[in-house]
Length: 193
Image 1 (cartoon, rainbow, N blue to C red):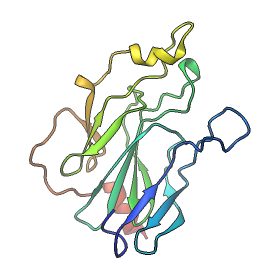
Image 2 (image 1 turned 90 degrees about the horizontal axis):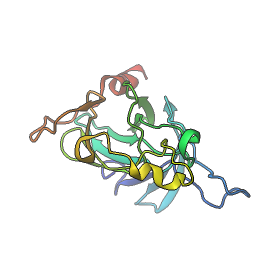
Image 3 (image 1 turned 120 degrees about the vertical axis):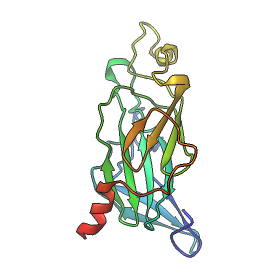
């Protein structure tokens, strides 16, 4: 994020710390804090977060946009808990982390499209394009590793558009969007302090 610090910062969050536990299980990192790397000082810092945290997960997508109000919001969408079939948690949730407040907000919509292993990119204004992914909640007798790859993607052509300003999914891409403004819940988190 070029807008913070004299040379910008990097933010790392969530995921899996492979090899951290003595078992074969995933060691998922909570979103109650994030790691911030200051490019100017070349140092990592631990930063606590507040608000409505996502559950720990891996294989989610992450993309961010700078607002006209001097904030930077990052979308964390979907993900996976490392289990297949009925043991998988169906993550179809969108969470937004706002900086500099490090405040989490959850988008309010019905979760019906669990995905993981997807990508997302900021594509103009507050629009985030999600691409692909698989559904690991599907069961396939004998081989749970392939079941998610055999399902049809629920989004047209595997593409989705999430609008950060409204915190809602859109049916179409807007070629000339207005300048991005943070969602009302994000803006009110700053006004409350």
